[in-house]
Length: 449
Image (spheres, rainbow, N blue to C red):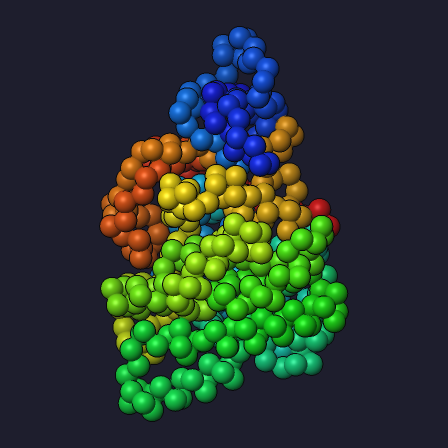
């Protein structure tokens, strides 16, 4: 592969904002020029990309996606959603186990790795799923090869609920890798569902979703997860926080130099609130539910203040005919991986977040929290996962540019103020100005543990 020189970009990296150039050779970053002048000889030897007036960031690492393969490929698959990912500046992802069959054994987990090796355009890893009975599989995880263990402490799509207290105790005590927890108290959810089914004769309005999957349900379960993590010294990562109250649990951990308990917010909880159910209906039905404007504001402040460590997507596609259903019948989840970086850049344009904060939460922090080897930063010797952004080129989300296999987005019609021009995966341009290069260059993520 001919060396590539990305020249004269505004580089956002490690809490700095500097004009510079990056040289890519043999899939890796071989030099970063900030103050020193780029040697003239490189312009003759390299493929040169003029990045004047563009922003260069490390590739986004999404620690929370559902790509639906195997078994649910009518909705999405690893190939289709990795295309959407790279178009959105996501160069690496970690995919969840609630496929069909679920990845709750190491054999099934390996099958997913094999599919990704053949089909993925972005770098990849997969979570093993916890159950009440698979402790032997959990204890056999290779920490250098597997991103983490997913524990559903509330039932969601795929219904892999772990509801036995003794099983949870063992999982938290024995897991050799980070425990990523979906936290909603199932007893609270079931009680609320029964109450409102009776009140509405089974025809519950979708606006009651955040009341059924309530603040109390989230707080109880998150508090339990933190309690178990403290008891067993578990490396815990709380997924998709949705309430201001849950942030109270994290206050004591915010300034610890080596956090043992970290947290994720998802872009939809930062973008939508419960006033949007009236217009979007079940299309914005997620678990945990989108809640109040005050919760949304608190989560955004949590991102700014470092109470929240990571921003991800919980990308979870369903067919539109599945989503456009009654509240109880419509599945939870929606596609977001193509548009997460664009959403976050809107917070930059509205002066709610800095570019450095966006890069920290979407690139640096996932690499640090999961101990990913040589990714997430623009550093000499690191894999060249990079994204070039045209910060002032507007575009509208529409059916013609939506790349999800399911063919829709809750953001359809939204005008974004920025656009991605190039995405590099391991030094190769996989996305350029609307065009995808499908020649595979992705790699399995490895972890320094």
